[in-house]
Length: 499
Image 1 (cartoon, rainbow, N blue to C red):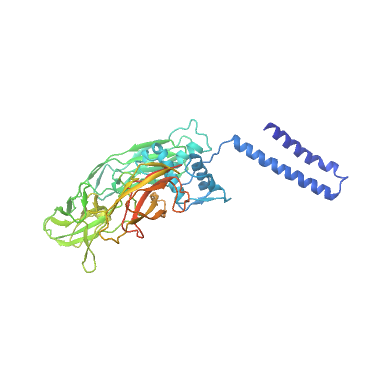
Image 2: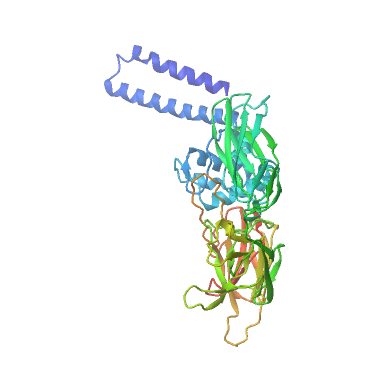
């Protein structure tokens, strides 16, 4: 390398003194000589840059939260980091674009990165599933691995105080304030875990980083059920150092609550179209009748997490004007608002909501005139297709051959479908609160179509129906009746494709 530096210096020197000897040359000779010298300088400068790049490892300090749809220098450098981690291919850089897009494949690679460093990213936030979103915790690990700022001797943030209510009524909004500072005068990010995230899989409230030395963050939250909770607040600096504090709060019974749901109320699994009693207690005198609802729930608390939808669902009417305190329910049955016809909800996560007649259910079914049960599960009593493998937790190496297996009921008619279609579905990235992003389910990837419904399918891992490579990351396998997306079943949890 020293020889190259010396040669470059001599070449530049010769270029500088060349005007002293060009008087005897023609103007064409001079122009040609200058052009050649400039070309050689450019070549040597490029070689010098490459040598310097080899001597110094890649580094970049990630200061922005990143999600699907972003396109900037941070995303391009995120690709570089994920390539070095083995979750993306170097081929992404071959088209010469200045910036790369954060797409569904990027989110899947980020999810794999979050699983690899789960003890630093997911566990401190109480999460079991990756989000595919680059927030403060993920950025902290990226900066620890690839950040340009030296972190030797860096000290953790200092929490100087936390304040908030120690008692709340059901549905009452409390305000908590966390005060902290960074010894190195760096930015801090705040998050809160409330202890009642069963319906949202542990999604935390976040506050963007801000630069002052002394910082504070304010959070608001309300609880919908009585009991003791311990909200926990985490502060992270831009090198990954963190501090944590908590404050207990006792949520008391709302004395104005008119109704309390009794059953189902214990996380039960109910089989569709079987009989089950809905029961409730009336807490006030001179009470007449109630209206019953079944409420779809965005439940992401199971291992790996069910898919969270980007909207708040509405209660569905079961029955109006019910007297007494018990109702014999054909599980999943509901009435439509038009014509009062009956139907059955699909399998999934639900709550029962009981309201005084004519009352409007509140957020997630709770207000003074309504109460909701805990989340329970409705399953179909006769599934036509059941995915067996992969069914959650497997790690399949790209290009290896693995068997996708399922069980399908034999057709009742000779002409009924004896073939199925196979898909691969990436989990939907979770949009952190207050970030203003839009959650979109990634488009399913077709693995094959019209395959034998009663035999295992030997899949060359990480290839689609046209043998195009599929990025590493987390996915569900989905098996459907050929030509439909209605009669389907998917893996209970995601499995991981590793390169």
